Length: 263
Image (cartoon, rainbow, N blue to C red):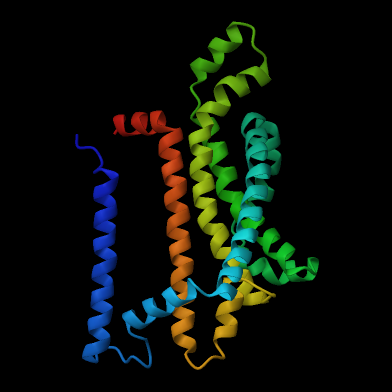
């Protein structure tokens, strides 16, 4: 059995892939395969993105988006984890609420933005509400799934020593479910960022990456700025996912070793 390649090797391969894509796009533009008027040169986009990194107004927009992202993600975790434990440990409650959950889960979160606009006059509150709804699902589902993976023998052993339901939940179920919750939070973080920017694009507002993209549409170099801002949104998503992945590996290395050992 071969293990995963080291992190440095994976980062090097990822960097090589990005550099290769950059070269292909640059060559396609300079050779005429892609019209630079239709899609700017890769070097031009990177230059615009570098300029935006020193633009105070753009950085304020990024901070606004990240503020809504962090607030919505935090609220979603604080609500979804207890709800997941409630549904995962009380089968009757889960059975009663299952039809409601199955009805709500397929509804696209973006489709709720117009409704959120009617319910919340403040754009920041609107963004947070939509983010909470979207990010709530992966955390909830992973929490419930993690509870089903808890070793029943460990729970029975604790009960045999006289520990009550809450003690078993705190000493066995929560530690065993924590890696699954962490995975749910990582997935929810990506979804939350998508919803934050989508809400800004569809509903506008005073600030945010989505608002910057809308306003950039009226500038002479609109396409370059739009792609550059979108590039930064992608970078933020990659960095946040990498940080959450690193935290998972540091905090729950024992779970990763057990999972890879079972393959």
